[in-house]
Image (tube, rainbow, N blue to C red; front, side, top):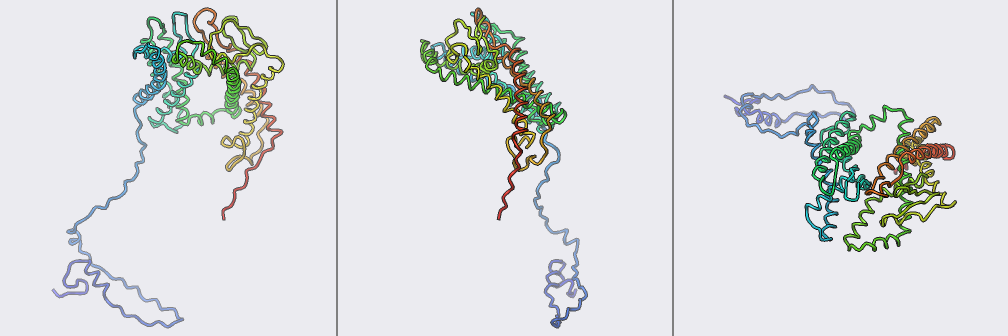
Length: 478
């Protein structure tokens, strides 16, 4: 067959046809300068494609990027996540206690893994508020520092379980409650088993009391973490009135600032009495291990001492034995145990100069009230000054909102300090040391009144005397 232009050389290859067509020389015409060329009729080359030839060619698959799946990844099963996170939280709080007590027993020549595990379990239960029956009586003064560590790890457990089941930032209050209840129930089972194996000769423990205390702490700690992890705090905040929301936040801040003031005063007192504390430690003829153990006990109860100092600053004071009373205007105590932590006790009633200490809780509440006004002015992210994105151009906060939040902050601070005062006390054996710590009701009532008044004063002072500042203009880049 003769060759044609469409099929050069009789080839059936369409690519050869295309190359032959592109090699054709086209005639051109000279276009005069200055005159627009006349549009030439559009000529398109055609290529004859043989489907049969193309079908016989080899094909190569080009790798393409996979599209991300629109389905959300499935989380871990709830029982598995709860069991793992709760056991991990329990291990991280129990093992340090058992290791410290085991080391002390080993240095004293009373080594043994079983004895260290038993002593660590008893101290661990005491940190959850479970009373331990001993030969000298009931031991119920729980170390608040260990309790804080337990709540922190349970908070992390609730947060991890919320992420594991895929409820992170879901805003689901039901998921947060479910996680908290599951973690609390699992933790209650761990507490009951620990109490069952610890109960015996020399240490009497109630299994039911252990289960209830572990359940309460487990639900409380995990609920904080699950609410944070699922972002349910924002959901709850949107459903409550603005005055209640700001009142709860300000009351918690005021209560914690009061505890901080008590901790500062208590720590300063112990530091000033450092010489007496050293003499107390040296009086124990138990070697290095015994002295380290006494120091460790004092550190474990440092949080209790901070709460007792807060009660001292508020006025009701606290007790260190039956019939004792330690207040700013009264100091009546008997024989006290020789502990370095007690070296910071006052020598007697404070005079007129000592009554200035009563102003510290008031100052703490006023600072919380000042922060309330600044937060309403500039937003939560700019509580103490304007910045980019702050609400500095918004109108001043209404007086009704400030007064309402201040009034509500009082009961919140009172409940917080009353609960802390109740948890920080307990018996240390029988006899005269059966009553130690502050009374919860007087501390809570005084804290409520002081917080409400001081928060309102601080918020009003910030509203009147502190003029709102505008954010500085952004510098232009050249």
